[in-house]
Length: 229
Image (tube, rainbow, N blue to C red; front, side, top):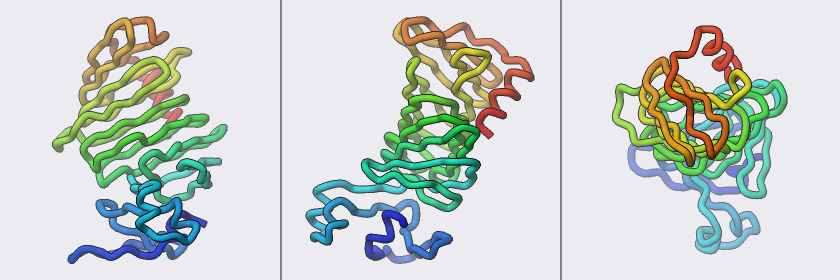
């Protein structure tokens, strides 16, 4: 059972078409996927529901291994390939699990095991904000197209990226950030560093400066990527 199963199909603008999930429910195109729930679930008027909350679809699941859930406010659901993910969704993976979600048309977000990430804001293929509560992620967006900043809030500090592919999570016993391509700035209360392609940094705590940019070895890179794919 899905949130959209409770809702009527909304009208489309000229030239748009519906897309169907594997279970047959109809959803709107990604640039128009905005559905109303809340009071509507109780059978009340859409106008009242709009005053309660608005749910906006950010993308969809493309790969799943193991137990993976999404939680939007009080609604917690098991995620499978093809399922939508929403703005303000808390994505959680279990032991040994993996998740890959496509955000917009060009962005891919991969989660390692025992990871919790909330999609705080997302502008389709432009930028957004994520909150990484624990675990590891791999963010992948082409750097040859115009894009806005992506900010990732972590327990250790802030990661600010532009058009890039980077890893963030446990590595060699510390929290590490590695940039495969693009530009990333890692900030803590004590300082910041900028990383370009092939460079990484370690962050010990929010009150310690990130280590100087360093080229990670092939083994460390491979282990980091394997933890999220």
